[in-house]
Length: 224
View (tube, rainbow, N blue to C red):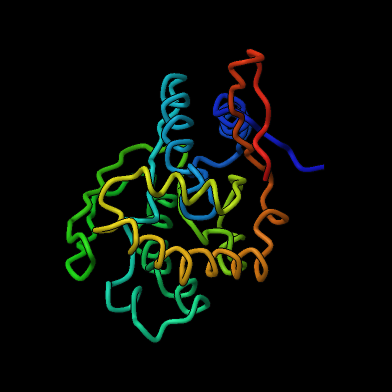
């Protein structure tokens, strides 16, 4: 039976136990994934902070920092399937960062994104890492599953995910543009991923966020 979590502390406890029980000195690779806008980044940051408080050395990697070039991601001829396959440079991320970090426990490198919507250079400087936490969409593709020591799928419906994206800054110049992007690419690409990869089924655990019902002063799970 699949484990279901509803707070970061529960995931932290599982990962801490995995770290304490591991026989190898190599870092564990943990994937926290879900559709765009599901809240996986905020959850990952909470889990990382809780682990660090317990003395576990954590490297947090954001999949968005390995986005493909703007011309590739938003090619007017792109289908949702092509967006799903090409929107992120995951092969480069694993080859240049994740696998060397797992092997050696430390790394100092950077990725320069000068061909994307928001050009930037992301610096990585990690030492003596115990757990590598990767958060991002499409991480639970079959090609990458064997690389992970543990996986968690953040459950969310597309309406809730879109509402979160609207609240984020610098997603798009206008809400109309975001709506078009979400409906034409992000949502169907996410649906394709769910249909073709069954990430919920392959994940070792599910995270279902709870919301507070203030009138009744209790928490109730959000519908998926």
